[in-house]
Length: 585
Image (cartoon, rainbow, N blue to C red; front, side):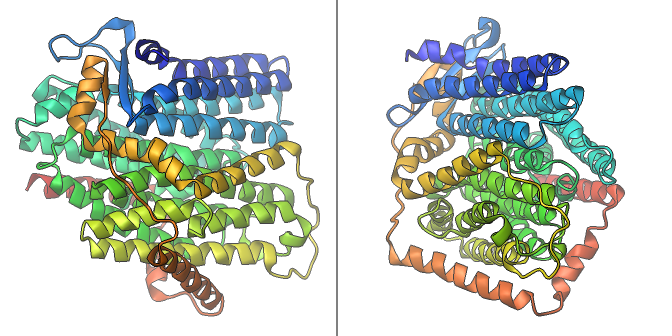
């Protein structure tokens, strides 16, 4: 496809799902089925559109293409208009968002399509608005436009979190999300405004060029605010506390949407800030800070995953841990780690969506949310058990599933950078994650349950379709690592690690990226030993944890998370001040 045509189609990536959101809400007044058809058709069309554009962006070693709304293009390197830009990093995540979003809408129609007409229409509309915001974040090249999509995502998430108001925790969870993400949104807006005040630029490429002339203390204050705001959205500690609560009340499909896709808005924002706006020599302190925060998040999040009894809350804490792993990968800023983190974003979207859909189905068919009340489901609902186990195996990094290559690349990047402490933290987080998820699989599906369930709902066709497709994705992205790395992960890393070429593409219309060597030896004995050794230790730890009292460090971590929105706002405030102090010293 011609580059100009491909660029001009980029805004449709958000226009189509927004139109679908409006159509679904209106059509639901007449028919639930018509509303669902409109929603699924809109997201299918968005997926097809991005599939058509993607080869232009991923061709060769990758390319950056841009389109300015209203054709308000740059003048002498100064951008006046709002830019949509597709680089391999953003395009890859936009495409996976549209594809998984389509599956989630199919699941919703099958699982809870019997809601009242208005309620069902509102649910579909909010989900599509959130999907549009995620795609918009991935494809924008403007800091204030990123803030706009941040807020659209926030508004949709408030409605989705509190959608089932009859559930006691729904309103409380929505209120916590509102308070903490509003603080985060304010920080993002002020940070972008400070950069604009200092440099007269909102465009990511233009800011990247401006900051090469020197980074001032006000610039670093802006960076600290942006880091804190986006870290809150991503659930990076100490900005994370709202995230597990946001998963307790919504339906499983909404939790899957949050965990698999929405929290990556924060990761995308921070990654562009660190690698495409901040110059390499001036961004060391920010990347070091983010690496440390990522390591703490990965380990502490995995430890808290091990301690949970509520199945959806357990998966939410695992998402916190996985966001820490992504943070470490991107902050390390070498070819292997950045490509590995990009690969892991794709994989996390696949296996976490599948795990949450399985968890949501279990809660729906049994009426039980706690692991202590479950058991015996492997015999009664073998498909759900198989789906959950595939998700666990994928996140555990068992070859040939997809987590093996992406986790291995992140670890490889940490070792290449000589960050042995970071590698140790990532490996410890992986072992704790495996232990927590194996424990959950055993308690929910394989442990004998004396009393039968009072009632087990049947499994619907849309549920089966969504789980089969996600499981197939976990296998496909696992057995073809060379293809994924060559087509998407390596070009994405090249775009992130060549900020001046990104600026040229955004401000000049298009630019080609240089090749980047990223190699993962699938059959390397060292990689296999680390992966399978982690699984063995994790399984052993899971068996041990079932038989011992809760360790003191985990009790302390649980005690810190009081559930009070005041305490959690305090965490965010302290973290924000801490980031500012560290970066401005």
